[in-house]
Image (cartoon, rainbow, N blue to C red; front, side, top):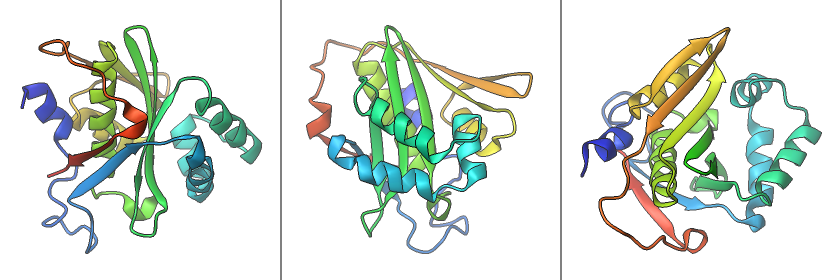
Length: 196
């Protein structure tokens, strides 16, 4: 495991079995690529976020019609979405990654009842692996400066964070793969990302 991978697999909240996290919190999170067929799961996920959670995720308030437009766009414009489903098959957490040249922009949200269980860390790790394999050299994450949970997640993932006028930007520089690798068919592959 490279030191970068070790940084990416570090959960900002420690071991959920020993830090007072809810009983039954997953030690590993099964992350998979979301497909068009998962649009309802994405809609339900975003609808379950509080108005403040939505403001934190999108850096402004997000009306239902804005979310509908966003979901339609990310499912059709090449943005890749990852998800972790809970035991009742609800989308517990999701990440969106838009790769443009060597830069990948990341957004993450986890439902309140599933926070502090390593889902956000697993999503970031999976997104970093995907970005690296698709030749991105940097991942960026933009958020409000008051979004302390995402800032902690970014820092624990090894991202450098800068602040300016009430907003924050996080950056993670990715090493090129050590050797030539075949890019997996991500929509068909599930990945088990273990979280300490």
